[in-house]
Length: 367
Image (tube, rainbow, N blue to C red; front, side, top):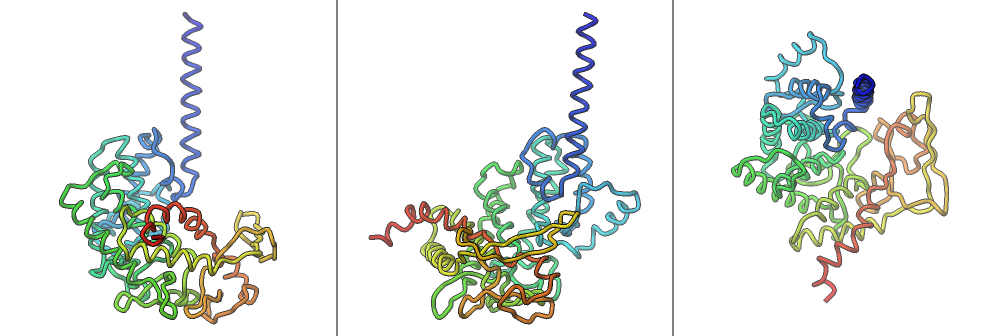
């Protein structure tokens, strides 16, 4: 019996040690990676609940969150007081860089484990924020309340608008991805918002010499034309954001003729502008950051796409912070060359999924 008790104590201690170690490892992850963790017991742990309290503090009263915050980091008493004072100031609330969506994902996972209504309320406030932030034309700005400058553009950059629409779609379809279900009145608003978003996407797809192609990272909120953002982010066709837009459109059941045409045209364009025989090599410094990027000719390299392409002829271009176009990446300085994704591979997922999608929805086209 004594041996059994000792064994139980050892087992308990080991379990406690493993649990503590796991929590420590989780909190060392980036905020993005924490929110991407699979649902599980950790989201009901004391550590997760402590993080959730930070998330609640960072949420603005308008319903959104600021960006680039490592929410898992402990907060001092002074910082907590500061965040409390900022709550009624909507400034800084955004969906850029995954903000707001990431926090809502986290709150949903916490709620699934705890059933604490406080987290549900904060999540639903986030839903209301997304609905309020949408333009009448269906697009979303980068910040809401709207921030002057290029931030007012319809923002596909870094998948801001697609992230919003994916969340709304899961809620609309009651897919179970999110543990929190809005009331029916809100669901109806979500349906309208999603459809308006799709309509905006269709209207902003760029026509090159009368032929539909892809999208810019941002479009003017009034004219729908491709628009400039930062100095090195000029009006262009995007190889990255366009792919995520098409994947969203491909997820729509029973798509309209307009959606089918948009997908077919974008797929054709991706095949046309695909770059082969070129590989990106990277070197890293002791902090794990990219210190050097080099483009190398390689006949066996997997296809890649340029991040930015000319609107009239699809020619890839690159920019320093002076906004002057260069047509060879080696012509721009190391800071922008190494610190920005000038080549991407997101369109490979569109090409990978297209044939199955086409077999389902292009039947009439084949007849």
